[in-house]
Picture 1: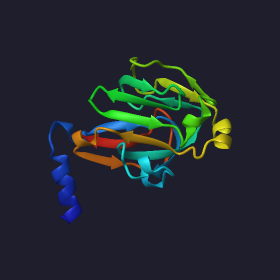
Picture 2: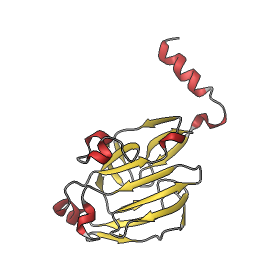
Picture 3: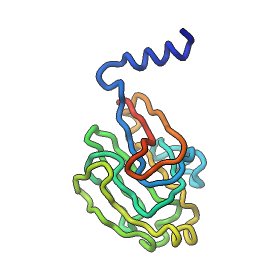
Length: 169
């Protein structure tokens, strides 16, 4: 048994929550390292750690079951508290707040209970690719102090289907 096998065994013997909590893609696209986002607040993990997605498609959905905390007035970002107590923040693109809601349509409401895959915001990708500084969309965990371990996944993702993060609290 190699060193990594020992680590894997230690992790998998971690009790009831060993399987972890899966966070599903809030939008379709390709996973990109959070450090590649052209905004220091995200790249340096000031608001939390996670991944970013180079978007495809036309909607952002709940990445897990929970309650919507805030949907920004300009409809470009939302926060969600999962039923497991994980605080997530999904922020479409960089400097998209300056578009003053152009290209975004709010579907859900603040305080609403949502199930994984429920649509929260629809967007017009063509408009946003033309007008936003970047369309890279950070998906971050803002209460990292409560997270024991986070496994960032990679590759192409399908909205509401593919896991992007696996978390152990």
